[in-house]
Length: 502
Image 1 (cartoon, one colour):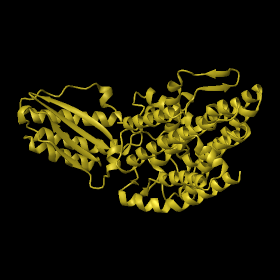
Image 2 (cartoon, rainbow, N blue to C red):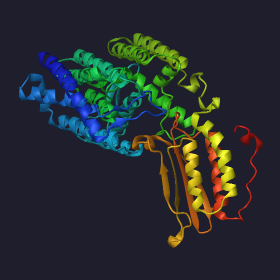
Image 3 (tube, rainbow, N blue to C red):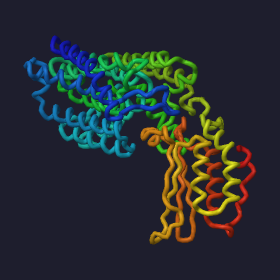
Image 4 (cartoon, helix red, strand yellow):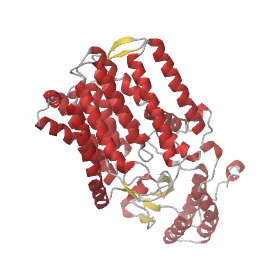
């Protein structure tokens, strides 16, 4: 255990020392989080801090290997597992770094996650069996690939989605590492001590980073850190080579329970978006940590409440390993009841009795601005002529309604388009804000030409509000009549119930 303690201290020091260097690098490469409607911080904060966690985790392991300590040599002797752990971890960290710097579509991140998980599976990090209470030993052979990939992707995204407050994802990851460490230590010597080494080293790297990340944070871990942390929390339990009970129970049950909070938050987000008929990849501000802030809790208070829930699930995971069936059942029921109470009180899950935000028909700032700007724009579009006037009118609308951008494109045949492509962007809008902005798109079908109008703005819920969509549709209809000329068809009347919300 001396080697493990040494690794923890080295990881903590290296992560703590590397974070300020990474912070400077983040400013240089432009990996900076700007405030948006969905974010809780009010100033620009660098991300990319996950690089410090990566360095704090990997370097101590190789230092111990260079020193030829027994436990490090035991870990390094499993060459295939070492390659799977490092190849998958570095792949996912590199993708996260690219996303922090340049931005990456959710679908592309999912493909990288599947690639990293496939590499881990190919080198032997597999979910092949598990021992569960009441069910006994369950084998997944020969379909372990179909279980392993969702396991990795689920844990990665669960940790990624919970990363919404200063220190939250790091704290949740720390408690999961503690659970893995204790269960591995109880699982038997010597094989599971490799898991002890990896879990303890990752915990040390997290604590070193938390010195800079706890509220008020000076740096965020970004997708670099959250996805790397999720990958390692999914992979480390699969390294176990000790007793059958230790290896199989640790493989799924313990981390699944220890990560109960982020997993539940991920599932609730998917359900919430499905019920709202939105893409499950869309972002919003309805996670449990956001709702705790909306209820009046301070930033630190919300984080500490969720730390308490994570600690509770850590205890439940330990009980699930050492307890009897009825004790496990009581622990699961008790923790589920506490989670239900917190979620219902926060109001982050409509099916648990909370009112859906969209059902409240609350007007946001953009809707209010459009309500004042659109009538004037409609008059301008109805009383002017010429396609060259359209751009000026829409740009004035964007400025008055505080939109991030407005653009027009055309697919006229053989270069005969009457509307030339153009784009107006707010001076203060950053690439990150434009990526996260919601987009309302309207098509105007002219004879031999298809014009597309796109409006972007910042939205707290990550979705186009129905009132904003209707108001911009009126603008698009007026733009169509302008483009068609004096013989344009008249505006179709809309139902009174649709107009009443304006």
